[in-house]
Image (tube, rainbow, N blue to C red):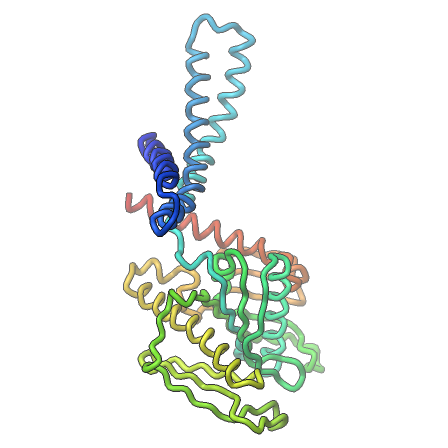
Length: 359
């Protein structure tokens, strides 16, 4: 049961912030206050809804306890009170979810990396299918997709691809995609009609702002070399390809898609920042409780998270035992939200359970 004092404290703080923002006028103080106010507003909204519902329930109870209340009014009050009592647990839960600590990276854009896993050419074709799925999903969400680097096979598959996806709350939704994605289908290259199983790995990294990650020039080794296309073709006569090595962490990023060395370096630095940001996040994660390690997006990509079964037209997310017979809509990006919403609800339920067990 959420204490009324907790609700009052939140609403009082919101009023204080409003008053102090009006006094501040501008500058750094105003920026700091408005940031806290923006974070507190959704919590205060749920607190206010819960407080109002509780007050209404109390008023209705007083009406029922009053011997002078006539029969017609009593009947109305009973119906309204029943309805409120059914709504109150949901309002309490929504308020508790609003109180859950936010992942600082949730509002950020993301770097998405897809790599063909076991299964040879079929795995590479599946990696290309996953890229199309995320591109279509980005369209649904009005996000912008920029391909950073791409390594194709001869028949249209992808060995690996790195894309930048920008927009509102990209990481909050895509972070659940990190892991091994498995496909079961009859490959186009299979003449006997046998179902093959292959896999691709997906990694989603929050894309940091420049201020989030400080990269010291002395920590970098930058090598340039001649870029080379598939099968030794399209050889570039200038040293436009760039390899950036971050010496303290050992992270290496290579970029050769652009003809200009300057553009390749800029793209390589963008990917390096994202990997370093994730590297630091994971270091912090490792230092936290064991339970956090089980959470999606902790960087452990050894587990198979989802299976796409083409003969049965189904997609199964193994983390929450969710199966949808909407494979076409999933691959078309339309059903991705259905899976992500279920994963977010499961994540919130785990966090609430952890809070209650510690509380």
